[in-house]
Image 1 (cartoon, rainbow, N blue to C red):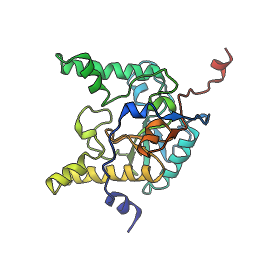
Image 2: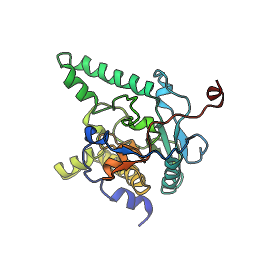
Image 3: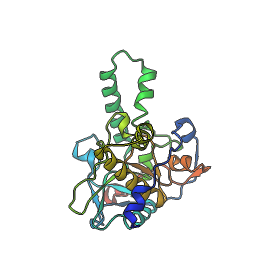
Image 4: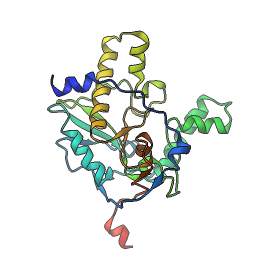
Length: 252
């Protein structure tokens, strides 16, 4: 059995749901790894900085990750079928970008649910985006450089059908959505079966490479941060908040 068949055959398991009060209290023992650019290996990794393209406030034109995460991602590229590539939408995210996204999601949900109270609105927003935080002990996952949003394209550069856009705000974005649908209905139509196989491929490649998945987002994977430690039942994480090094900015 070839690698692709193995990757699409293995089911996506039901991982534990994220408990943010627990996640944010996981100790961080910072290892001080640098942030590195993702745009230096176009043979296997295509960078598509989604938030910069959409003009989200303070977003960056270049994608950065921690060096250790980059090494893990290189491992993952070696499991891709021949000619396939990763397409990365987002990685390191400044606090200001996190705040902009949180406010955008919150405003959209408020528009759709005008009578909802503030506490419930915040709770709903947290299902789609984490809180912006300047507390070094409780950083948002992307602010650590230890989170990455990505998908896969085929040998012709066509994005694989994952069943939804990244950042969609409905249940279909849950990583195991089509696994649950298959279990409930016993069978999927051809289109849904393809989506299921594509999600399995992405998930299994990333998990085998040392990442964990944010269960409510099929595109989001973590390494080294608190969310990663939580899913692996670890007591500590080693990525806290980070910033890229810009030579002239750091001289002034």
